[in-house]
Length: 393
Image (cartoon, rainbow, N blue to C red; front, side, top):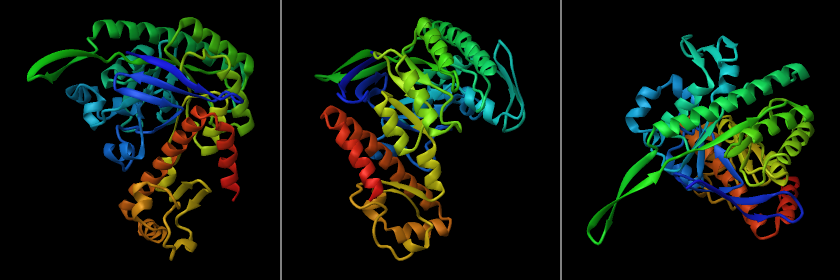
């Protein structure tokens, strides 16, 4: 049964802790979703992700459609079995990747024609096709196709894009309903009870989220939010932020838009990523986040700690016997020194990417867990103060 309930709220901010139920279990919010674009969080196994505390990961429609393709994934009844992940999955609609990666693209009312960045082959991604692919993937949370625009963009271009996004969202909802009705989204599971087998149906119906656009224009953000709320969705995401705009504008637009979304629905900020971003966006009432920052930066040797970031290639770590972060309970910090991690990174050993990524994902999961705990215990203001005090120490 799909359900989202608020467990606790901060009395001094808009921060809140909730419980989002999908077909693959409960997700505690606020939550950060590691990015597993191609059906894997780079360098980590599902078991390592679970040990780090990951509850839900993100996959991508564009990439998985092009490679390996739905013909392969259908043989495994979806992405969960294909990648050996039994927890929740959110899939991006593919829109952002079409606009950022495709060699050639042409937007029409029907959808967007693009050439694959892999082999140049031509494809048409429509709202209906995006939903079809995500249903094939067996996503727990499906995103509507939206038109992404570059930053900065003028008011007219932004308005045209959000209006197209709203029309596409309506088509996505219709395609979603038709897809659910025509597909039996249940699986039979067998349970042993007193040596007798019983069969029960497990509902696999996913959530459908729409994406609010509108750039840096408050009137357009309101127009977009109002149009999508009128159509009605299970949850709402805010797109078009963390794309190069100044931080103060990002927070202003996020706060303005979050206030206009239903408090009974999960609210998702797409692409936001630094630890400071997450803390401040939780303050504004956001529930869900994703970003490549912890994994990409790990592969580039940057590690996140409670005192800020460190670059493991720095010469001062050559003889350092301490772990990346004192007191960290991740596998990397329990077993390896900064000196060893620096050696691996400088030698370009593949183990460096795995160990660095384990630490960064663990840090992000721990940060979200501490925020949830602080909200539930009425100590969020103290948490926020300690968070910044530690980074200044």
